[in-house]
Image (cartoon, rainbow, N blue to C red; front, side, top):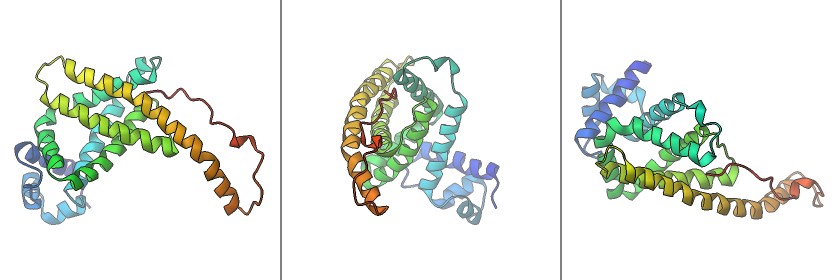
Length: 227
């Protein structure tokens, strides 16, 4: 069984190759040679190139989560998330060339873009958690997907910006999070509409013939999870 050190070396080697060439042109043989492992070890470590990218995304997640700033706890949720996502960009900085090639691959192949979206959504769920924002149900689905798409657009600005102070990137991120407040409101509205239907179906599956008069059917409690 490959060690964690070997798995990390494979990810690092893959990202180095990606910084030098396009995603589609990278072969498994190249990755194995760059990581100094056999193809059998590469296969035992990861299922695919996308799986290696997912491992890279997880490593960035872990770095951001370990770099939590406790001084941000008293700030509004949107400010906390802004800080978390800027920290993520800081950790992505050494991989700018690789991310440019990755972005090109996404633009060339929409199906690959959908696969990367799923990887990104998982990361955004953890970024929300790092900011103290944990959601569930339809609200979680809507917010994590919207945040993933929004961060991908911010990434484009970040990749093109030459100013070390990153004013354009920060402005784009701030605007994205302001727009995110509308997403939360929209998801809340849909969830409130679906909630009574979902509860009624649950009662039917449980064998209840009449609607319950429980207060659970009332409006959802207000929340302070505002991006």
